[in-house]
Length: 226
Image (tube, rainbow, N blue to C red; front, side, top):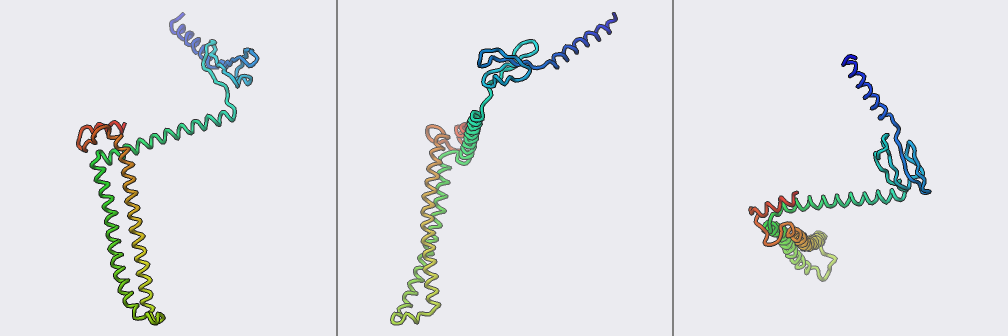
């Protein structure tokens, strides 16, 4: 027999065996609730509540399939998976915020400086509004002095003066509200920086906060960025 013919026969036998295995139906087996061993060419309905095995044509185990879940069980598993995903997303968001916070404030001096600047802006706004209120009050006093001429007959007060008095009162009230809002803003600023400082102390590590140029600060920032 020529060698080429022998190789062709051997190749044909190999391909045939492969095709037989590829076309062989799946074999499923399990032990049902009555203790019977069942076998089928598809998943076995009697064993949906227990483990089934899918076998290779050789009889070895190809895979194991767990019991099918009920609708309620599937809902519980899906809810559990959803909560797990949400928790992982929250953790990832927290890490991103921590990295951003540490990048912005690599040390305590930089955080203190930013606090002072934020408070200075509020103080400047308060000073400006207070000065405006003082000027308005001075104008209002001059109007009060003019009103004395009409004490005996208030009906003769000129409409223009009445309008100016109303506008002055309205502006004075607005400036007072603005000052109160800025005072409250200073409280919010301090509360925010206090909250940040608690977290930053943990990110900076124990001991004194490093300076921005110190190797320790860069090393800790690299750890947090991981």
